[in-house]
Image 1: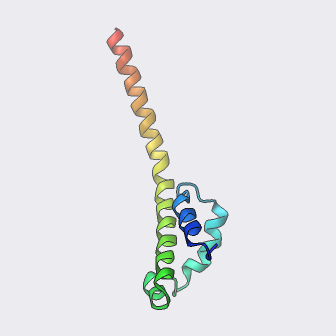
Image 2: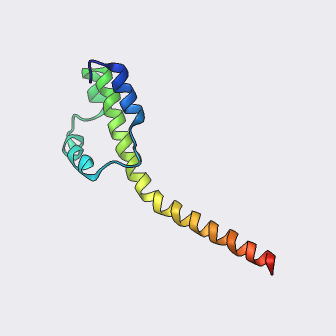
Image 3: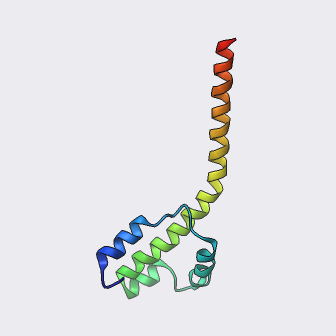
Amino acid sequence: MMNNPKQFIDMVQEFDGDNIAEWKKEMLKPMMAQPYFTVENMKKKSLAASYLCAYIINIIRYNQIFLKVKPLKESAEAAQAMAESKMAELQVV
């Protein structure tokens, strides 16, 4: 895959950060806990590696936030739908 940069970039762009399997996040934990796994340290080795490191760190952070916000958003949408329904009923009365 790394010998086809276009394919790799397409795969990264199409990655669904909303739905990362738990087993994948568990597999990443040991690597992400290493002191060398920082953008700054990776930049010393390779600019491409630093970008990939930043992507991994940020997509995992995004997923953590998304999983906390998703139920709140769904609750808000349900409350909004109920409010609109009740307003429609009120207008009928």
